[in-house]
Amino acid sequence: MKRTVLLTSLLLFSILTYGQLSFKGIVKGLESVGYSIDTDSKNTIKPSGNWYNTRAKATMFHGTVDTIPTAKLISITNYYIRGKKAILPRTYGRAAIQEWTFTDTTESNYALNCITKNNSIVLERIHKAPWTVLQSGNKLYFILTGGTYMRDELKKLESELRKGIEKEN
Image (tube, rainbow, N blue to C red):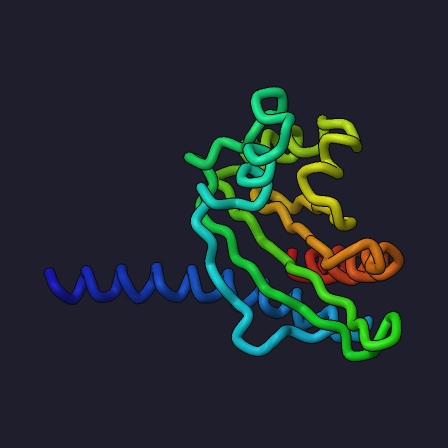
């Protein structure tokens, strides 16, 4: 009995670890455009504390903006990245890259719809800096930049992230 539980636990651990390692690999791929992972920046966020719902509830649009149901959101993994070269004097690019894992593709489609159906004024109030979202199966990938100075850099990051996601699939 103990051996079965141990093997099951090891199998579950290896599946979860593999998923995190592949996401880390995708984020490491951003080094080709001059960004590296900040030391010890990986963290896991509770699904109920996701940035979108938290900020949507804090704006004046609370009640008119659909929030994302978190019951089907399994995990959120977050990495912070930082540019190696200055974009402006003494200003380095920075962003958070998040991977949201849902139970199935239908749930990730619904979450993506909730986010993208809002008009630009509402989305700007929720996250003022440039950001984007990509979908791959049951996962959503967010690039949340540090400010408007990252507008041009966002396109490079999105392109590289898209390549990394396609390579993993």
